[in-house]
Amino acid sequence: MTETEAQNLRDDYLNRLDAAIAELPWRVANELRRGIAEELDGLDATAVRERIAQLGDPAKIAEAAGDEAASAPPAPIIVVAPAPAPLPVFWAKPAMVDTKWFAIVGAIALGFGTFVFPIGGWVIGMALVTSSRFWRRWEKAVAILLPLPVCLLVLLVSFLGVLWQGPVPSSGSGASNPLLPSGIALWHTSILLAFYTIPIGAAWLLWRLRGREAPLR
Image (cartoon, rainbow, N blue to C red; front, side, top):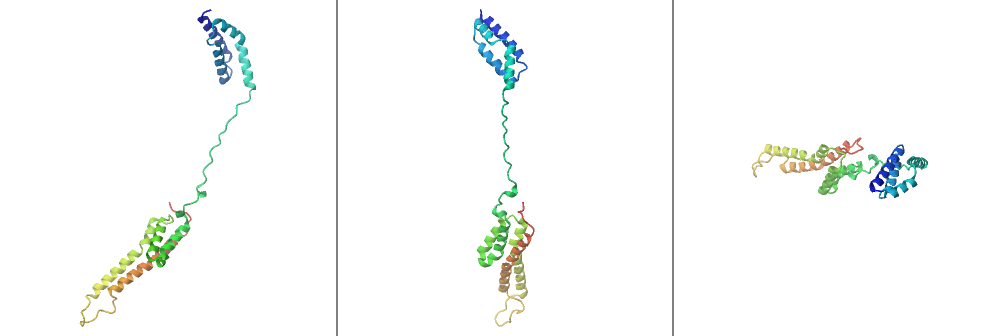
């Protein structure tokens, strides 16, 4: 027999097999068809006829495959557990600058650190206050810059007082008005007032903390 005859035998058998396994599940039918086609491939006509005789009727092969598929245990279903949801924000530990106690310490350092450590205490307190997020920017600016307008106001008053007092008279030509303080006295007064205004700004910051339990965003 020729190769053409062998191919005709294979095609005829596989066509009958396709019709028989049409009702089977796709996976079962596909594997069965592929396996039989591989067994018949490359054989001559005689060998193909013998192998077809061994395989038997395609209808019986499909019936046996259907029974086997029905009795097989179902494939396990793999359930992928979802990733755990992130913890709510309120469980996260806040940064140190986002705590209320940090803001309180900063206000106290600004107001009273100046008296303990005149320049450095004020700088440290200012750094703590500006780092905290419990105040708005304008509140920080008011507390920190409050001594500046006080100092400027007193200096302006002192300047006007000096102008009002006039030039210091020469020796023997009279004395200045004793009711008006000297320019040096007013200068010292402006410095002291600005110095003691710092705790007022710190107290105002503490007052603004009323009812604030979370940092401002």
